[in-house]
Amino acid sequence: MGAFGKFKFIAFLGSMIYVMFSYRNYTSQEKRAEKIHQRQELRKQLLKELCHGDKQAFTPMNRNLENMDHRELKHFIVDDKHGIIYCYIPKVACTHWKSVMYVLNQSEPYPDLTSLQNVSVHTPNMFPLLSSFSKTEIKVKLKHYTKFLFVRDPFVRLISAYRDKFGIKNQYFYELFGRDILRLYGNETNPPKTAQEALASGLRPSFHNFIQYLLDPKTEKKVPFEPHWRQMHRLCHPCLIQYDFVGHQETLQEDAQQLLEILKLHKDIKFPPSYVNMTSPDSVMNWFRTVPLEDRRRLYKLYERDFKLFGYRRPYELLDG
Image (cartoon, rainbow, N blue to C red; front, top):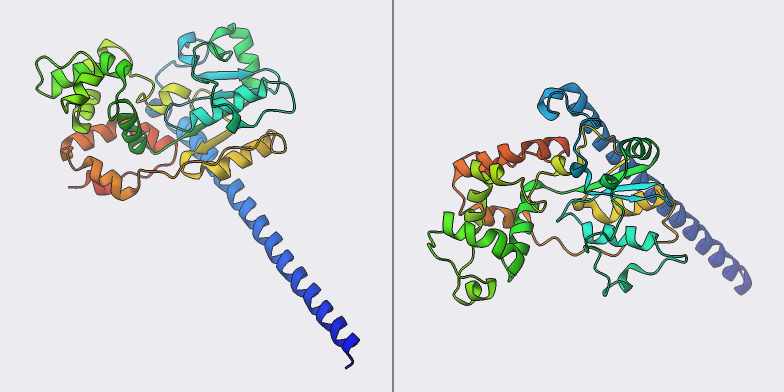
């Protein structure tokens, strides 16, 4: 075989290898897309089965959208331009998704989400909320708009809420909750008045103190749970509202891409990369070491509907002593 023949053979071999790899890559992407699609269908099917299979267990008697207090729809952001409704849950990538909702209200081409450092998407009245519309409008929007939410392992979400609100200096949460938690469950008769003073003296509610506060029947009697630790189903009412998409924090990047494709926005918006989850299974065990077994079991009962409705396994390693 001459030099030219060898060159042609090598070129042919190279093109065949490229085709083979391209096909394998395409097949792999197809399988991955199908797996993600099936996962989404299973999440929605689980909600449907639980909500309709045992209504009394997951939906209070005579509970429906008609008699729901408008204040219970304050976590639903409405985008009339794109026909989207997003129920946001604190400590479940809600800053990212609120940023997406904010960007969608800007003129095209949409700004990059990473350029919003100076925009506080948690400012009150930043977005139109479902609670601000009439009952007729609410009904129409819920019927025709694409509705989505993102959820998270309930115990991991609680750890994240504790770490964010009581593990660092946070005057608002210290004044509203921290001082009372220290006084009622931390044996501090006269806790410091400011978060800065408390941290300077090495005082903060322990994680177990926080759990004691959640488990105390008096807590719920005073005022409904603060949204950062309120049960997810109580914020987003998945048995009363049929969601088109149920995302999980644990698969955030894949779910975000899939949702943007469903909304036909994947070419216009790039979802920012998520941070590495700091709360691994071993870390969860470490957080709960200070919490007595009986309190862990009571806490699970408090958040059991969230575990079941959104497909999170019962954490046997924490509950079976």
